[in-house]
Length: 104
Image (cartoon, rainbow, N blue to C red; front, side, top):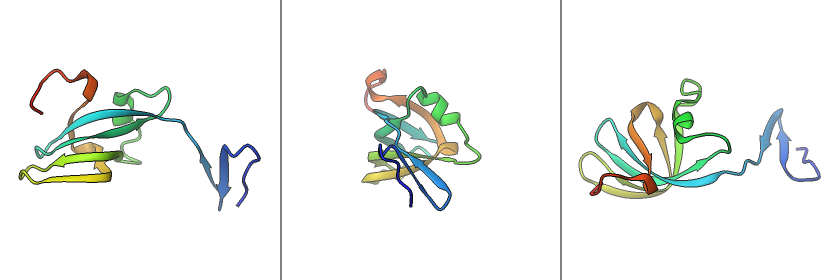
């Protein structure tokens, strides 16, 4: 494994890993089955939330959400440190600080 002196990226078996500074954004998701998720999305620089929802969906259909509170369609509640959401199943997504409707 090769590591640069500045520690910004590393290479392992011809795969390059690079640290990317992200901005944590608290979001709410409503899925097509009626499940609701509130969690933190780690937004890459120069990429809007809508861009992330539509970007490379065929190559990588999943979106990571951390510290997620989930209310499943059957009413069951669960909390997850990491929750991977299939972007094809997202009906609605918005930042919590821009929430208009109450009682989510």
